[in-house]
Length: 373
Image (cartoon, rainbow, N blue to C red; front, top):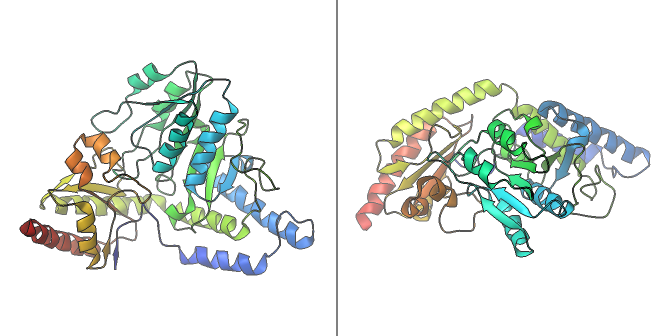
């Protein structure tokens, strides 16, 4: 098997599975219980939360555990907008956001909020002048992902934050799901940040919302004691502890891992240049993601053709609902490219042997499918 869909989800590291299993077996108490087993579980969660906070450079009190990035995004967006309705009902975002950003924004639009999409330059980067123009006295929230999940465009969070901070009442949120475990994030630039553990070799079903300590939001889930006032529910001890383990492992030898990924990415792009495809990712994209478009071949057809060779990649983000990539369209302004785009997402586990086999089979499939047209 050749797996090239790491941006959708990563395989769980064995060490993380071992930690999860051990906690399941040895820490059976409800962390909210007052007896010894409950206290033991709570102490383990507190220690894990401190580890997560230390790795991220934030306070333990700023960590909220969720079921994943989608819940974190919904909690951040709805939590801010419903809490601060008195500040205004204007929101700014981009065309590059994940569906778990766009969907809650669509919901808020249906109940009276106004959403503006900031312009992007030819590389897919936020137009800072347009952002300044869009900011208003009643702008309650700006939500912009650190890295787009389909093309891989990496935004300049420092520059964006500087513009947003000019409006003292505006809150800045970023979906950092595609950055976490791959890049160091300066959380002082943000008021809120969302991510999911499954993107850095951790378990599915656990995510994190960073919330600046003095920021109050309206909870998405009410009722029941938990690790925070802002997300009710019995704390999932094994998931929380395994999340801390996965995060620690992700940042070990990060520079070496990133250097290998960059080398693999350059190797892949050099190979793709000899094929009948257009490469959509550019110099402002993270090396983990390479997006390309086929010529007059539907990406879904190619996906299943490659599947016959046990090769797995994506047509677009796994949660997308449109029949074309809105992110590719936002960057290329080409509907055909957006309809026929594919995403290869790489890992430090990816080898050049795998890339050679993928490119060989891709070339064969292009010729075969082109011949059938």
